Amino acid sequence: MTPRVAASQSRGIVVVGAGLVGPVAAMYLARRHGPVTVLEQRPDPRGTSTRADRSLTVILSARGWRVMEDLGLAERVRGLCLPLKGRMGHLPDGSTDFTPYSRDGSPIWAVERRRLQHLLLDAAAATPGVELRFGQRVHAIDLDGPRVTVGDDSGTHRLSCTRLLGCDGARSAVRAAMVRRGARERVGTLELAYQEINLPLPGCDPEIMHYWPAGDALFGAFPMLSADLFAGSVFLRREGPAPSFAAASSPEDRARQFHDLFPQLTAHITDLRDQLAVKPVSTVSLVRCDTWVHGERAALLGDACHAMAPFMGQGMNCGFEDARTLVRLLDETGDWGAALARYQDVRRADGDSIADISHEHYRTMSRLPGQSETELESAVIRRLQDLFPGRFVPLYERCAFSEQSYASAWADEQALRRVAHALTRSHGTAVRDLTDDQLRRHRLLV
Image 1 (cartoon, rainbow, N blue to C red):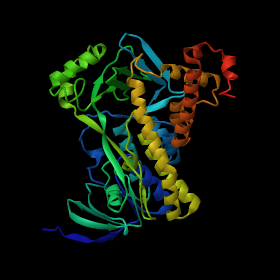
Image 2: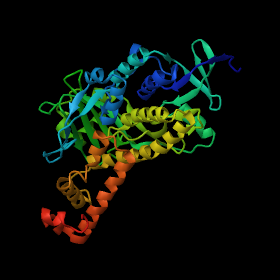
Image 3: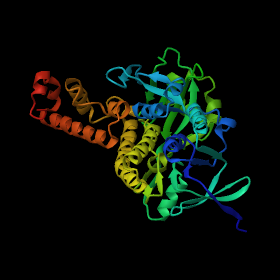
Image 4: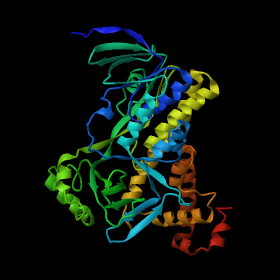
């Protein structure tokens, strides 16, 4: 029997999704464009213990901080964050390799996702014109209305609105409606999965992200504000032979596999088996979409249009920048149709670029010394960055400490790699013996 749908309710702007990007978009828009209703299918996370034991860490860098400042939240958010000045690789031979996040010592900032989401929801709820509705299951979307049919404990309702924004993640109902109208999407799952493991790391600097590469696996750990612990995650292939999650189905097998991969860590995790028994193995969704807007009525933001691997820490920052860019274009044009068209043109290339960068960064971090055929080129790149600091900026620094477009940063990185490749092809290993002056005067660099 078809459920009875209540008569349409007229709303202003409707935002689907109350994760991280949805509340940010709502706060931006309500201050400029009138009432915003945020629909979220899950219960209010501020009043439920669902998955409260999770300690997933997200990173705030320059793009995210610009948004927090715009919204007047920077001081409050900073109180939840820990500064990180770099990452420390702990290699199997016992040596370490420290990489600063920036050349001038500036930090990125780690924050527990749950704490940040609660703060953003509180701020959105306190913003005049924003209404948060939880437990709203989206049944249907009419992009032309636009209209959203939702169900909750009181029945099924149809909401009419002026604009519709999909901030509803990798399984976006708004994107699905666009696909039904001809948009093309690529949706998949990263070949890696992860499982969270919290642990003490005595002697490890709490202002550094620490990681243990193992070639086919990686363990990374961030300091936690709420405990004298680090929030760690082990990344393994989902399928295939060991090491993988599929090859170790029981907690005992996983504990043995973990010990084989990271023996230096197991002494610090007295409850390793218990954590592996109760904490879920999580997958990472990947999304690309060739259409981010529908006329002047609807748009996608955040993971709904560019879910990516987490290894650059830019997924949330990119989503926040989506919202800021859309509002900036609305301010500039004063016209939703023109603003949405430009939004798609500007942001789609950036979303694709940071997704590529993020996936590659895992290979950089998990790779063991001697495994890379491009180590000589990498050494040349680092030297060029030291010799020409204004011309050749590290890719991580471009993404995390500037607001340069991701597409432009990726193009600059590719150009630098072409120079390094040409130098090594021309000089071979003798490129290491070139003096600084010889490099500065080299025909490829003048």
